Structures are given as structure tokens and as C-alpha cells.
Length: 200
Image 1 (tube, one colour):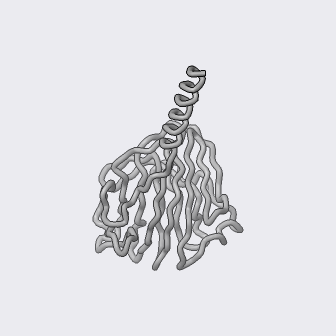
Image 2: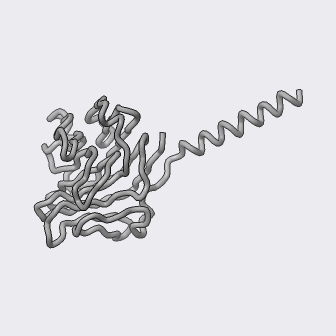
Image 3: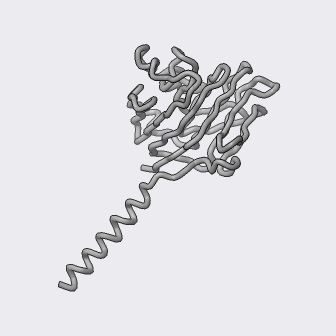
């Protein structure tokens, strides 16, 4: 009886520990850029609990990367595009100056492949969403994006609808941080909030 009770307590503690490991954590504290690093001269700032990226005077590419690397994860976030709105979410990425390596889940104006996956300075577009799925984007409103990366598999969702699924050996070998992008060309502004990540 006593052994059985001890075994029960051990199993309960193990279950609680595993559940704690899988609990979603916030990537953005809503106050400042703690936990993130700016690359380039474009603007990144916090306003009323929102993380904002905006083109600067140089009108070049800009990135905001996490201090920490993430391999396997399930990430959800919200974005609202203003002006051009051409941005993206990089994963398993590295950077030198503003030359980034890795993979981007696209965030762009209507009919410009939001939710698709692009390999920066590599093979280019790996997969684009279907034209009918792009209509899920809410222009000028808050959108919810989910990105799940496990091994060599990547799945993206936009407002609860699956956009793409990709299985790729090169991605499976990748490692690095998560980053937000400002596209070059100027005139871009995107608001972000509610970053929740669950490491898998």
C-alpha cells in the first residue's frame, strides 16, 4: 500500500513537471524590448502594450531577434498591418549585420503570400498559400498567426485556418533565433502583440 502511494506521488510529480515544461511563455512583456535585439537602423519600439516596427530614414531591411534560440516550438502572435505592412516572422535563423539566414513565415499585404515560407538568401519561396486561403487576412485589423515547427515540419495558420504545411530536410537541420522583419523600401508599419510560445 505504501509503495503504491509513493509511486502515485512520483508519477503525479513527473506529470506536473512535464506539464510545466510545455506551458506557453510570453516572448514580449508589453513594456520594453527585454529579451530582444535590434539589427539595423529601422525603428522598433513599444507603445500602449504593443510592439511596433516602422521604416526608418534608411528604408532598409531591419530585424528584431530573440536573445534565445528556439528549435521546436508552437508560437502564436497577433499583428496588424498599417501602410505597406510587408514583414515576416523568421525562425531557426542567424544574422550578420542585416543579412539574415533562415526561414521566414511571410506577413504581407493581401495576395502577397502571408503564411507562406521563404528561405532567405537561399532557395527563395519554398511554399506559398493557395490564393483562396489568402482571403483569411484581415486588412487593417488584428490577425492571429500560429507557427508550429517540429523537426523538419512547419505548419502555419492564419486566423485559425491552416495556410501551409512543409516538410523539409534543410529546415530540420536548422537552428537559431526567432525574429521579426521590416522589409526594405520604406513606408512600412506593423503592430504586434500577444506573443505566446510553447517549446516542444
